[in-house]
Length: 253
Image 1 (tube, helix red, strand yellow):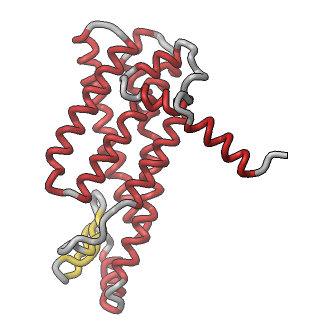
Image 2 (cartoon, one colour):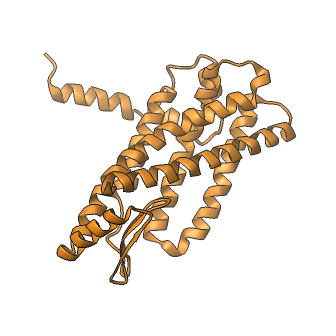
Image 3 (spheres, one colour):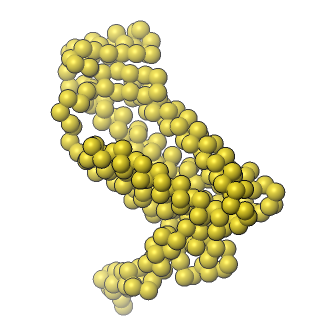
């Protein structure tokens, strides 16, 4: 009978084989739109399925964003903040904004009695942020798929086409965005350069993916992409702000 080591060896050999589906899929991510066309053409055994690939990348990126971070920087304030709420200490003074007066008084009493309270609250908020970040990561691809359905409504294509396109686009974009977050944390001086380069790569990747998958004229695709990008960014900002406020309220209320 095969042992656990035999199973592990077989699994690792299949997963990490030089010509295995994993490596073919990762190479395909460097060619925007290629994996989507291959999947829609029926080449589904040569590559990892879009949903499995997307979920795997989401888990890895969320783990990196959550756990790989520098220690507290000198001068960093103990401040819990959302889109509308602030609570903490700034330059040694207690700050409480957009909370009921009785809650502000309550937390000020707690902070006076226990100066380490804010550290505990920040850890609690971090736990809520981790959950919210994973939900946002998971919701990004379906959101783009809906926008693509609207942008290419005249094509009358099944929603699955747009969903596969959105999944593959995000499989390529999430590592880029995660790398930008890592650079911003560890090398703040490089943040503007990293942000500009990431923006160029993201826009180029999306444009080439849409052009390759949907075809059509260059200008029509550019206009559709612009509309999708504006709606997508607006939605992302809205949900990010709402999620930030929710994490603070769950921590403090």
